[in-house]
Image 1 (cartoon, helix red, strand yellow):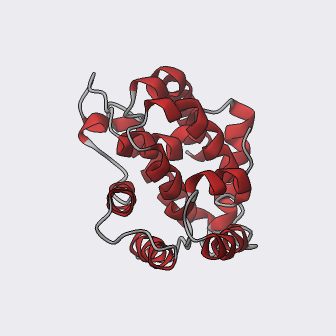
Image 2 (image 1 turned 135 degrees about the vertical axis):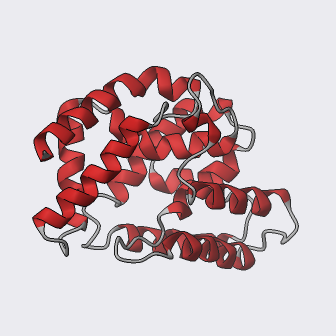
Length: 215
C-alpha cells in the first residue's frame, strides 16, 4: 500500500520539487488538525487505498490523485465555502508548482474539484444508471466508508460526530437523519459499477441501522 508521501510524489512527479516538498508538509499539517476527528490523515489514507484499487479505470489518474489531496485540504463543518477555498488552494499550488494555466492537468483537477462540490450526478439519481467518468470515481471514493463493515462504520459515525461537537445532540441528530434519509431515498449511493457492486448493499444496511439508532 502506497503511503501518503509516496502518493504525493506520484501525483507531483516532474513538478517543482521544492514547492511540492513544502506543500506535502502543509497537507499533512492541515489533515492533522485536532478538530479533524474523521477528515484526517487516516481518512486520506483510506481513500488512497481505494484509489489504487480502481486507478486503472481512470482516464486521468494523476488528476484524480491531486483532487483527492485537495478535496478536503480545508475542512470546517461550520463553513459554507470550503469547496471554493479548496479549489483556490489547488490553484495556488498549481501556480507555485508551475503547472501550465491552460494545461490539461490543471483543468482536469479544477473540473474534478468542482464536480466533487456537487456531491451528486445523474448516475446517482437514475435507477440502473452507471457513471464511468473520473468525477464519478472521485465521488465514490469519498463515499466508500458508507459501505464499510459495521464495526468500522460505527467508528466512522463516532468520528464524524466529533467534528460537529459545536452542535447539541438534538440538532446533530436532526441534521444527521436528514443526510442519511437522503441517501436512502436516492436510487444509487454509488455512481460507478465497481463501487456499487462492492459497497451499495452494505452501505444501505449501515445507514438503515444508524437511522434506527438515531430515531
